[in-house]
Image (tube, rainbow, N blue to C red; front, side):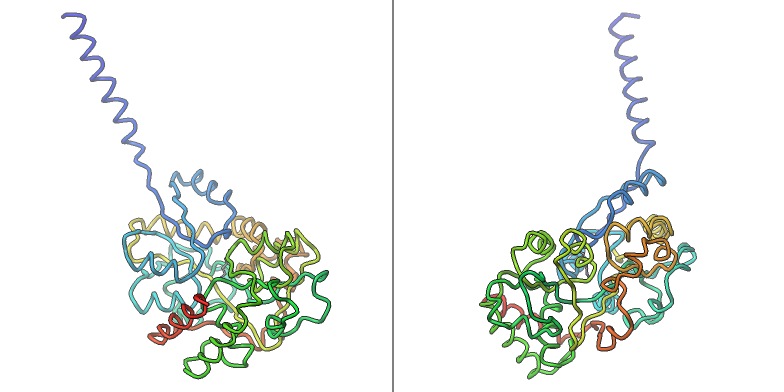
Length: 346
Ligand code: N2P
């Protein structure tokens, strides 16, 4: 045999081994969609290492942004972590799959008070991830009066020192509660009044923000901000002059929960991931890092007492007396969309 023939036979042989080798790895990729700044990335690495499943991780800033992407169906996420009212809507619209709880043995560690809530009454579609409240964060060097009401966000003294959340249900909730209405109102006059209040407030607002609120408040660029309690924990750690208050008119109590969108291509791996997140060591590590409130009773026990008993993250029942959970407003949400667009265009 000629040398060149031997060489080409050899190279075909080597290429086959090489390609075969790569093919046999054939790694599954799990597509995960979560809020920004809402996981300890070492948890993802650990999952990949332990299971050999690769995680493709994407983030969103609001429930509405997440919904549009999942509803369009061209992104096939295996896992998403929306809030209560959005999960309720997704269940109604057939956008999420039932979870096989036999595959989630660590679900036993989730506190009962987070099970069978109104948004998933039979508890078939979602596993609680983190929970918390909406409140006001203020810098005590810049605000010298008591902060106990949403009204302070309308005080002209703080012109251009106020940050609002770029999230329609949250910002409308602030205005509705200030006016002593329900944050789930479907009354035209109440919604109109809330809209007008937010339009009247616009000149006082420095910006409508998302996760960048943390850098801005830590850096003392504003005096007051509407924030989620878990972020207040993080900001207070970085800047002890920042205090968090749940206003007396009431707040929103949210429960962000893990779901499997119906477009998921890797359901078994998705359930593995959910169970992994509910493992005590993982839930502990994740909660310790993020600062939000865990519904996992064993993880909470392991937290540093300073965090486990922090009233920002774990408010007393009396602070939650006037709290409401957002519900899906059905087609009335179109009215919220309309007023939100009007507010933002001012
Ligand atoms: C984290 C966002 C938390 C979501 N950046 C509050 N529901």
